[in-house]
Image (cartoon, rainbow, N blue to C red; front, side, top):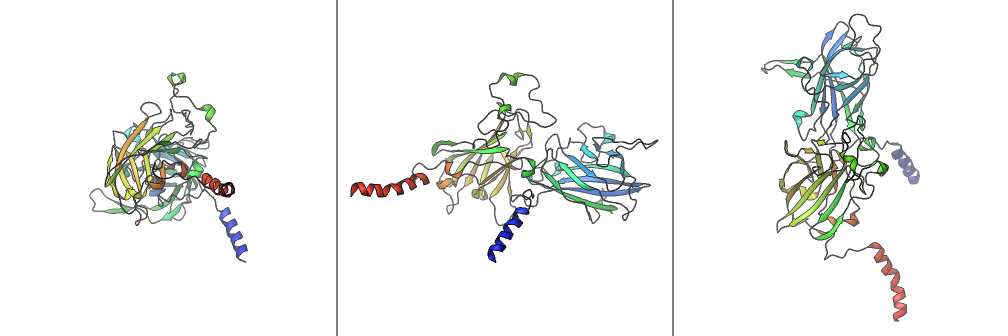
Length: 434
């Protein structure tokens, strides 16, 4: 009976999609899209749509977010402020006033910086770029206004849009159904009066790295002052399918005008390396003091077509509970579980190194971290000084195998194969000797 239950449990787990979006280092992270109906019109309503990025370290970089949905009935968009649809669709049945969009499944994008003031809306016009909540809460909001026609004109007749999609800027996000929530409340500028939306619904979108890409997008290499060995990124850490499309660092093609220009499909131009990753994070154990130790962090960009703005680097290590000083980077502890403080987010200082340039001489940012030792746990043995997890821009990086980490010279670097060989050789030695 137990065997049958075990088999049934195995198949039940197998049926659960592996793309379920859950990040153990940011368990509550999501992007919430809120629709607030602010007024009724003769044939519909005017709504404010607000997008809040509640992810601690995952932002949406250029070319920005793309939001889509499917109308429940035959709704049209009469006008928009602060955003626009990418297609108008077939509006041939309308005479006089022509709607902004007549498509059943509109696709909406943010307006660009520099948009005329009469077309702007609060928190709009950033080209779809959305900062992470942990890095810059004020820039983690985007909003626009939409006037919807041929729709319900009361709380009971409005049908919620469905099949929401979000690209940020590529795939990876899964959006749940729209859910009616208590109306949003607003304060007047003098804070003496409170108003509220006529109707509010929320859509929650979560991110899954498995949906975003087949391979990791970054890798980790390691070194230390106590060992000359440099542990490089694993070979083909980010997949080698595009090895024939990579470009060597000394190639003459790099001098061709326009080769670095980003493409609409965001296709990368990666420097040829054994790991084929656009980003490499190097962790170097630099110095050892009596009560402290120092680590040097280096992030290198191998993509010739992307400058990483507002980049973030998340590291999990048990000694991050006692960070004394961080040089050249900003730092924020991440404590998703109040009893455990072993994760932190590093990010660039504004207007100094918050931009990681394209591959080349300037495509590197680095900093050093000074940590105070916990005498009960601190050790250089068995790779303890190296990180458990590393994320760049919200995607987990591939770490090298633990048995390749730099080890202490005075500790025996035991090889399981060598130990097994020794065991099998003992009988033979005894036969010869005795």
